[in-house]
Amino acid sequence: MAVQARTIRRDDPAATQSPFARDVVAGLTARPKHVPPKYFYDQAGSELFERITELPEYYPTRCELAILRKHAADMARLIPPQSVLIEFGSGSSKKARMLLAAAPAIAAYAPVDISSEMLAQEAAQLRRDHPQLTIAPVDADFTQPFELPAAVAAMPRVGFFPGSTIGNFEPHEVSAFLRHVGRMLGEGAHLIVGVDLVKDARILNAAYEDAAGVTAKFNLNLLARINRELGGNFDLAAFSHQAFFNVERHRVEMHLASCKRQKVKVAGRVIDFRAGETIHTENSYKFTVESFGALARGSGWTPIASWFDSKRYFSVQALVFNKS
Ligand code: SAH
Ligand code: AVI
Image (cartoon, rainbow, N blue to C red):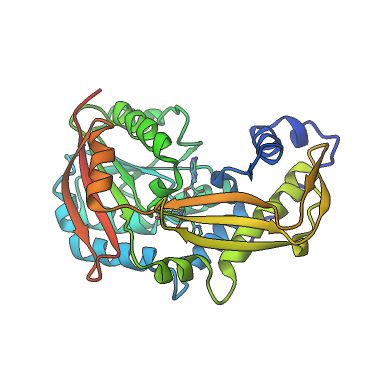
């Protein structure tokens, strides 16, 4: 069950001085208004994301699981003996479990996630399920430098970045991230990355605008989190979820649209909204194999293998790092 985050008074320093507070205030006082998508993932947000992965319209998780089911043994051949699998944005670790089962060369698993409660829960379960493995969770923002736990720091490293979470970065951020991961994993290391592919706009729109409204709840939870942690007073009923494929920019955009003219208090500030004005909360970029390959090559990585589901909706790609 969801553990409610501590509700913070508006005069509490955490409500005005944390990185979350600074990013939210900067984003809501900018034009257009925006908030980075990494803030979706408090405990409630992580639980809502898990519900999204089970929706009939949300094809990425099903497709990637099918690819892993079929090709995990091929991926396992890229993994050196006695290595640590480092997953960036591990969430439920469901996909890592499939690689762990197929790759006896993995001696340790280091899930890295910003969603602290979920990370701790999954690490505890993994220790019960895999007593022979070293489980070394890292509670960190993976866009920033972080230390690996000492128990795994000397092992050969393999990166795992499923879910197409890479699509939530802006193009210039992808390069910086891939270079940072390359430096961390080392020359010759492999990264196995899930990459969602461009497809018919109807399929993309449905995946982010599901009939049951779970994605809308996930999006609106950002406002609830701001209320809980930053002393905000957003009226969730006065904002609506919007999601659409932007064909020119190859991305699904998510926004929260203000249903009326209104003022909202956040972290000690008053934010004005015009009727219809939106907060841009997420981009989910979609790629072709070629466009992703070019991005990887431009960031020091060489694509060496790609695997697809039967409809070619999604891909898992293996890269090797060759430029530090
Ligand atoms: N890998 C899982 C989860 C994907 S959801 C899967 O494929 O199903 C994205 C995950 O990345 C979430 O668990 C979220 O908490 C985490 N995440 C997003 N931005 C992050 C960041 N900047 N640093 C660390 N974790 C992040
Ligand atoms: C985690 N990330 C890849 C998801 C995506 O599809 O961009 C987050 C998500 N947003 C809405 N639905 C799912």
